[in-house]
Amino acid sequence: PASAAVVTTNAAHAAAVAHRVDRLAVTIPLAPNVPDCGPVDVAAVRARLGIPADAQVVAFFGFVHPVKGLRYLIEAAARLRGRHPRLHLLLVGGFTSRALPAREAHAFRAELVERADGCGVADIVTITDHLPAVEVSAALHAADVAAFPFTAGATTKSGALLSAFAHGLPTLVT
Image 1 (cartoon, rainbow, N blue to C red):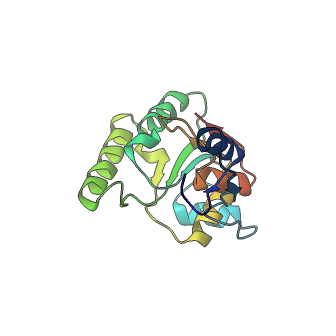
Image 2 (cartoon, rainbow, N blue to C red; image 1 turned 120 degrees about the vertical axis):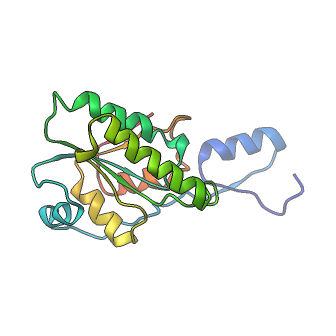
C-alpha cells in the first residue's frame, strides 16, 4: 500500500490490487521466455533429438519440477501408445533451478527416466535437459502439440506456456 508504484503482469492481478489496496497498478504483460527464432527443418531437428521424422510429437517445455505433472504425462504417453503408435514425448527443460537444487534435480530426472522405462515408453520419451533458446525454439517448431500438465493448473505467469503460444503450437493445459 505504501509503494510508489505497483506493477502487475495481467488485468486480473491489477483488479485484485485495486480491490484490496485501492491502488491503480501498471500492467506489463509477460513475454514468452523463448522467442520464435523462425522456421526450421523439422526433419533435421527431430533427427538431432533422436525422434523419428514421422512421429506425432507432444512437447513439454520449461523448468522441470515435480509440480509440473511430468509423471502423469509419461503415464499418459504409455496409455496412448497403443492407439497412437507414432507418439513421441519430448521433454525440453533444465532440471536444476532455485526451486529444485542440483541433488534433487538429478534424483527427479532419474525418477522420470525410470518411470518412462517402467511404463514401457523409454523408447518414445526424449529428455533434453537445458537447451539454448534457439534450440528450444527449434524443438517447439518440430513438435505437433505442447502439453503443460501442471498439477496446480496453468496461469498467464508461465513464460513457457506463452512460448508455446508464440510458436503457434496447439496447446493442452490443465
